[in-house]
Amino acid sequence: MPKFGLRIALWYATLFVVGALAIVFLTYYLTASSLAQRDQQLIRGKLADYGAAYARGGIRVLAATVRAEQEAAPERLFVRVVNRGVEAVVLSNAEGWDPETLETASVQLADGTLVQVGKSTEAREALLARFRAVLGIVALSIVVIALTGGWLVTQSAVVPIRRLTRAVRRIIRTGRTDARVPVAGTPGNDDAIDELTVLFNTMLDKIEGLVDGMRGALDNVSHDLRTPLTRLRGTAELALAAAASEDDRERDVHYREALADCVEETDRVLVMLNTLMDISEAESGAMKLTREPVPLAEVVARAVDLYRDVAEAKGVKLTASVPGAGRTVDVVTGDRIRLEQVAANLLDNAIKYTPAGGEVRIEVGRDGDAAVLQVRDTGQGIPADELPRVFDRLFRGDASRTERGLGLGMSLVKAVVEAHGGKIEATSEIGRGSVFAVSLPVSPSH
Image (cartoon, rainbow, N blue to C red; front, top):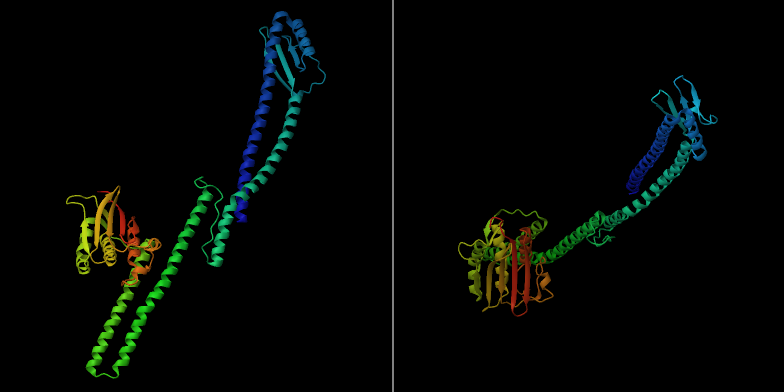
């Protein structure tokens, strides 16, 4: 970080100094050029005046004009007239003129007489020398200000980066992701550092949520696996203990029953692990989806056919409301098998928690640019404190613990729906039932 800050400070100071010095040099050049141009204009103006005076009265009028101007004007000019006989007449005071500092111009009159006017550059050079001294002080001040300002600006600019660095080091050192980097500015101010800080905090929130979810899932899995593994071990031990006192036929029957129980518990464990893997793949974006246009009406029809006998056996009325023939308002782009899995899980959950004499209704409709699949039941409802957790992995409410299940169905439904770019919402009222609504983007071609 110090090297990074030093580079920023040097770049800032260099650009500032180069730009400021360029302005200083340009100012000096323009000033010197302006003064030189002023002197040239003065000389050319005097040449015109003296030429006109000579034309009026010859050398006598010209000399009188020069003497009058030099007595009245603060600036002294060098004036010389060269007539046709190559006789030079200096009309100004000849003392004190240095040829090296004299800037001259001349004009030839109609009769061949040459009038020459000169002006000393000593005053201009003295003024420019003082101006250069002032500009030197200004340039030195610019360098000092640039270095100081670069250091201050750099310190201010790297403060958020230092906060990010400290947060990352703290996470690496402690392994905790609950630390957050404070945002210096106000939200929406288009500051790149603030935006990076917000994204970093959002990433930490996501990581912390995933870590907490993994921790909770591992805790729940370890707890839920204990029961089937204990039953597996108990079944095997009972079979081995009872086999010693039975004849061959009874022993074979006992072994078969024990193996069947072991297979059932093994299937339960495998279903749990496979479902957890599907949820993790869907949440991480690694789930392979074979996307195609899928009418939700067909998905619902298959799920209803699958669970109609289950609903009748429990005494629950199962009804469906889907778009009529020829309508394509419910066509979405997705994986047909996964979407059928979503509908089946929602129906299974609704029928499971709806008592005999109740009703489960599944509907398909359209809401703007989304196709909506809703499952309504008249079951016991979900308590308000448990409703936000119905999509958590391995969560089972108090009322659902008497029902057989893994507590992963709703988690899988949510993960698959979000993998398709949709969302799912749940509403419930105790004693009146629950509603699960799935919204999926409609296929662009429909």
